[in-house]
Image 1 (spheres, rainbow, N blue to C red):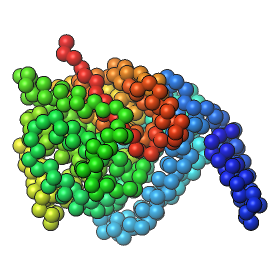
Image 2 (image 1 turned 180 degrees about the horizontal axis):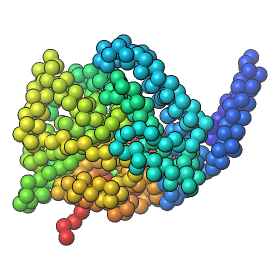
Image 3 (image 1 turned 90 degrees about the horizontal axis):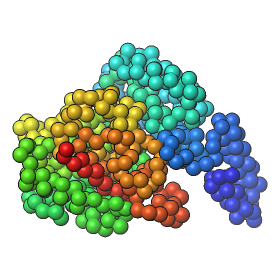
Image 4 (image 1 turned 60 degrees about the vertical axis):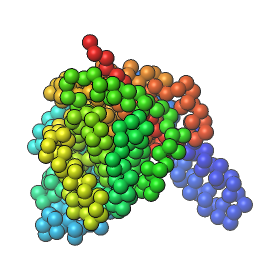
Length: 472
């Protein structure tokens, strides 16, 4: 029936002469039957995602299905383990009573994990958060269409709902209301990379304005997106900066030269101050590389201002929040490594001079919708972005939202997938971690999939894509 089942069956046949043949055959039968039962009971379609439809876990051969069958339950398991392991540290930060709140939160998370594994219907939110009513309207609308379960809903809605539910569990606990439960992994990862970051700072001091240096900084920002804590625990390569050219072999689409031409031409012709927006993805090393890119853009005069956009709540494990941003800057300032500390002081100076700006928190970035709905749901944000020369969207989730998480043909032009969303020119820096594409060369996805059916989940290939909004 499926690749997974065939693999288990072939493994059994290869083990036919082994002493443990009978035990392994029994295990294979149990796994096979459980998989068959779930697929049949939940009406999972043993197909690849349908073309021109939103991605959904109802398709067996999809990353969405694997997300809710294995990755999300495992993520919750790891979060529970982290909370137990860091209990004393949490109590120091949140008070002694946090011990009791933590137990209630862990109980809620365990229930949530079971709901995913059993494909239970989505529950309404009964908290007092400003977005609860909007979420409940959407859940009821899905219920009316019988799409209010983990494996029947769209992948984007279900995955965003998951992280909103986790946040709700902590918000109900008085001592943990403002605690970022993903902060231990984000902070520990960043602290462990201080020497690498210091070396990169040293290597990038005083880079002059030219195409080669711009592409270097842009690609450093791109490849740092491999460091997604929800996808891998592997640290960045110690020689990452020196290996940028070598990584080009994994860069399927490279429009970095087009981005350079757009910005350098605007530098020469624009009569207005040039503003660039960066919509962050991951904290830790990726955040550091994005700050380096912003510094280079400002120092070389490619823009007069760079604005940053962060998530309003802990999101997808390692997404940047305002607290992550300030923690990172403070960690630089306090660091004993001279160049890294100096970089932190420079960032603080640029913020004070308003050449860097951390934009006001906007909950649109955590809504379960694609960016084509921004003009309707968050018109002020849309207008704000329209005054920018370029918006750089980092990472896989932002890419999915650009495409409204719809499984279009992989060769469909990048801009044609936005559903009308084009407030200004848009650049996507994406390491591929899901099965959604656009603007790909003919047959590329087919060839890659033939060589490795799971290549799109490994975070090894990447794209730099640009959609230019021409002046009226």
